[in-house]
Image 1: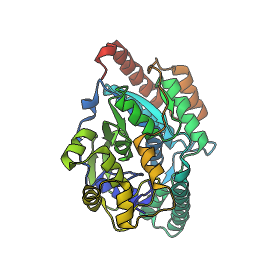
Image 2: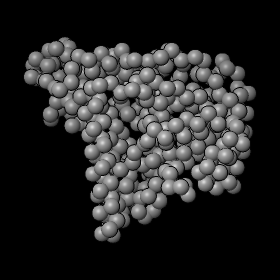
Image 3: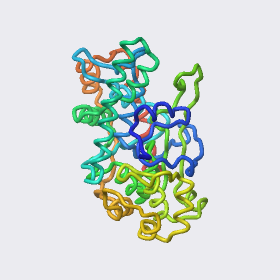
Image 4: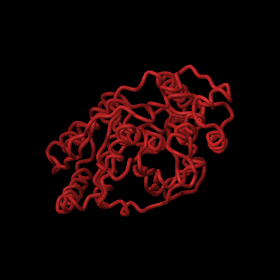
Length: 361
């Protein structure tokens, strides 16, 4: 299959600044590098599950790769990343809104099962690597075993509530909901590591937003600076000489979270194929392309994804008492560090509230 799940392949691909699920379009889709502050004054919609998986994967203890845990053994890496990284965004002048995945479409079942198997295999290899003393390898497998539970997602929502950050429950895929919000002008861009946002029609995609900073490359004493990357859909379509419908077909040929794709067809070959064949039916006929899922349903899902009408977004003052209760008393975070972060959050939110509503784009 042409897709992967934030696991070992994703971790090894940090050299390419990737932590990706979804469709692999990196060879065709190029954006421009930004500083975090370049997104100041913008409302950015963030794929919550995508960001939380990144935090669980990246925020781990050396050398074994154990995630952060509280005194009750509960994983807290996702809360640490969500709390501190979101404050960094707000300090840069960004107004974030998070969108959580809802019920996946039936044709995603096989991919979900594959991700579970991959995580289970990685977890077993993680334990074996620790037992044999291969700690660097163990750390990589630990990252590949990352999983997000319902309880962890609910804790993340609670944290956002206390921080005063709006979040939305999508009816299905979070990226689809974000794409609709972006097309409607409610947000400036979708933020995700996945290129699927473009297939769903998001006019702008920001990658690397949640993982900006200095990162060590796996198995190397080399560090790289990861910065946000802005990708604009219209520019991509113009540069490639295709329509959004053809971009969807390219993604499906390569493989998405919903279909396996065509064997030995990468992004460049897929681009050539969609220019030679007028639509999905012709591609299926000429390539003998058949899959377990209904490809027409997958195409329509990308073209017109399920979404909800979102009320006006509201950012509120953080609830300091509740945040200390959740982070310090419930999950054992350092009071001193949380207090300092809260000081930054309150000041940044105050500056943000002074900006006129019309100035947010």
